[in-house]
Image 1 (tube, rainbow, N blue to C red):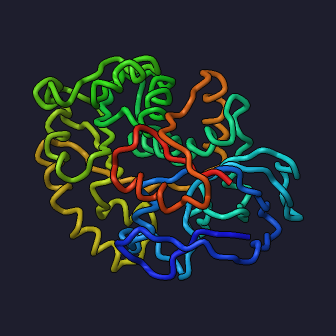
Image 2: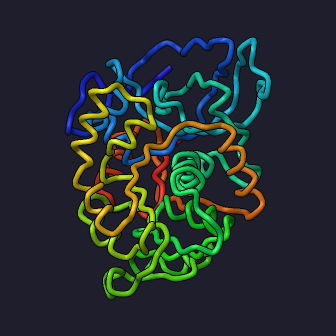
Image 3: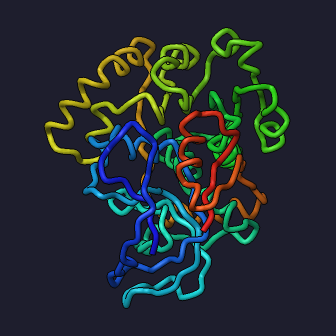
Length: 332
């Protein structure tokens, strides 16, 4: 089979299409023939080695974190899936490799695809939807009738996070460029801020939760709009000591991340707030809950563009520029 691989970590976006063996499955895995794969900023971080302290891999490495496809074989102990099932997944951290014609996936990471989505649409869902689900249900423990702010919520993440947050009874505020306003309001956002015309830090206050998608430069302003005991979870700004503890990292990593995150923790404590960092995990049972919601509310992910597998490098470059409005997808 063909797979998009790197031989070494590099800032240059250049993957090789190599012929490799179809992966062998163990008793708890299924073999998926990949139909489509989502291309994410995380893939750029995997490519350049930026997340090696969280997830380090043996090289050569097949890239790709989420996919949709059809099951071609099942392991002896697989209980909930069969050959021919259309499935989608965020691959487990230790076994990424969605940019390939086949993938071996543990059944614990899988869900049957939503019936209302195509393979291309389904490949756009797992990473962003699980990130939103784990941020809201897990890290923030978000409660109904509270206020949530998602800066930059007009892209692929907002398309999943807003409906999930609304299903939990939250009041959702987001910001972005004006061209994203109508879609964002149509999927449930209660308030939209055009970031070019208005500064959210001047408008918002007494917010219960923030999901940061912008990174370190915005953390101070985002913390400034929280009420005391408010919580901020970042997808981008960087890990802290709490993150290392939650992920059972060795002592040296706890110490390192404690140093790295000290300034962010200190900023949060000034206002009696809490700073957390999230790195999304594979979770089939959570993805099955997301599937029910996607079907019930007929949620459609935001797709920016699709590329053939031969054009994987073009897709990665597109994502690296940060100018995509929604998900970039590679098809097989």
